[in-house]
Image (cartoon, rainbow, N blue to C red; front, side, top):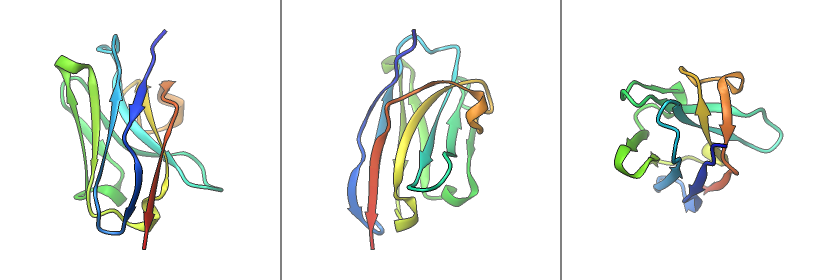
Length: 119
């Protein structure tokens, strides 16, 4: 059973930065990524990465968010800069099949971590 353990998140003002981490031992064969879900909205794709470093982002975060991975630590990161109030959501780590940009391609989910951006 794959377990995804998230950390990071919190509350910041607009323009600030946060970094999310997702520890994912034994998931070397999977693509990894992040989704988010705001209140009253559907869960949406944010970013994904393969172990070969192929990366995808949703257009709304391009140039502000960076996904990366540390193979030695089996950890995937999401560095979020220039945060906006509309980035407020619960962020979920995900593991599954490339391109991992739709919930139907996700096999495992993290527990979710709250990100709140105030104006």
